Image (cartoon, rainbow, N blue to C red; front, side):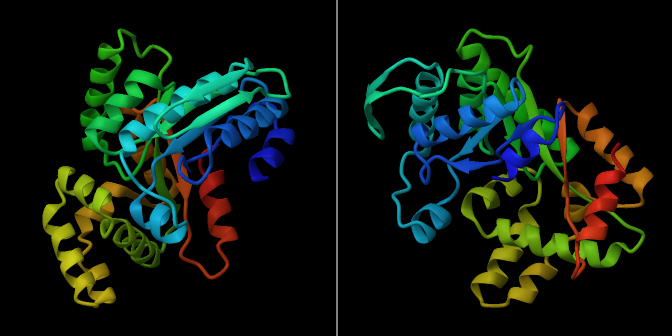
Length: 283
């Protein structure tokens, strides 16, 4: 609904989902939604899909979380077929489709994968039109890109029009302490998830991640948040005056991102003024 509103009230903005779990929405549902958006915003739509986590898929939705890499490969295959506008009959390990065809004419939709680990990054380079990364520091962008390049070589393709996007959590403010505390809580919520914990370790934050998880498992939630060090906050978030934030986001682009996605956040009870301040700082 939000993407549709944005689509019909803009003419240049690109719209994308970031990220929809493939276990909770079938490729057919995703293809129908993306095609509808594609008619509202021709040439401006990207469908971002990912495999989420066992907690969200299994505990929240009561659905099986298994073989995420194989599931993603098959989901992209079905999405390509469905988005083509041709009739789809498909028999796979995760999906079985008979006699499906879009009711609307086919329209261009790019497929982006939400990826963290090496294998999913390689799959993105192999089968997707782009990737949406998360929780990167500029210093770790290059490692992700190398895995994407490996997948692209395996598929015999180049990365000329491949989008390398990443969320960059940003708060433009002169009062940094509340924003840093908010960011520390946000990072903690990810660091206790196995996939993100492993990713943070590979990014050089092993000491902090181990301390966070030890405190969390002991029931010390505040203690877990307190284990987020300044170097983690400085590496994974952008907090400060507008000029500093703009310069920091440029560093992400120089590191290899083709699309740094400024993700504004606010520690305030009424977040709107802060969110708008951050958005308006990136004209």
